[in-house]
Image (cartoon, rainbow, N blue to C red):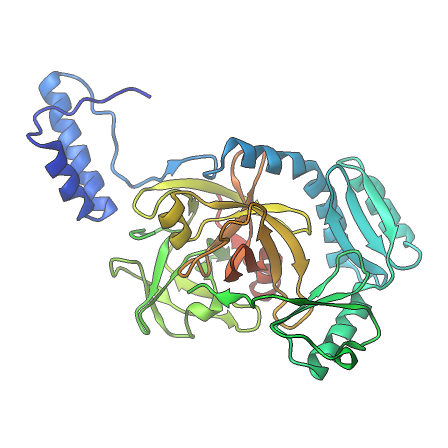
Length: 397
């Protein structure tokens, strides 16, 4: 990158102080004007542009983060073929899919039907797929989860992806009788996940930006710009606003009013005039962004990142190494992941923000939106659920 010398500016510190009081657009315009003046005085070109386009990056990931995600791409490709077959057709024996170090494990109760065997053979062209015997199918575990929820209040109920039983998260010990639901139940005493309720975006609206519910004065994060036909929306968390609430950016610019919501799944759409296929992945005051390629299913064992506004303010980058652990077995249908180094997975204000992976192209793959957090653990809604609920696809670049 070429260096640009600023000439004719009496006090650089004073300039910085001025810029920090301006919106990104105003600051970018001032910088452009100063650079143009300096270039004209020196006879050279002005190598800058107004902040109308984000500064693109490889999703704000470290080299290690990129390597870990890259190693999983063949596994994700194989698992995705199986997942789409499960979406298209009902398979009573299915129990779960897990991404392991070098292979995909498909857990199944009973004989695998010929149609699924063909899909597994095709998926094995991308990465090794091993079919393993499960004690219970997902359908059986889901029915047991309903009985468990009815018999005793628990904070969460999760599927074991190998089909061996359920995990119940509770703040206190439960009586043994309460867990007698026909499948093994592991009780984990843990802190319940709590809701985690970029400062100056502009239309077309992007993911990862600050959104403010002006009706109640609460801030969240935009997940992804999405579309359904010709209609444009911002996808975010449902707990960020009720239908009709006014949503604006951090400086008061109107985005839209909250539209369709799914309370249990904690996802909502904000109808707006235009959206863009970018997600902010830098700090709240810069324009560092990554473009979006599409969306994908989420798998146990997969490593993901989240780019909520509060975390980016604290860290100056996304939170990565979020390893998916469980799918929830209740009406919320959330996904739980854990930051593998024990770092805080999300912060207040990250709600609704983008959860993503990175494609080989360096572009983002939308995976979901942030809902809750408890220390290093994060709960999010996967993008596949949003696709089912609303029929939306991400705006892409």
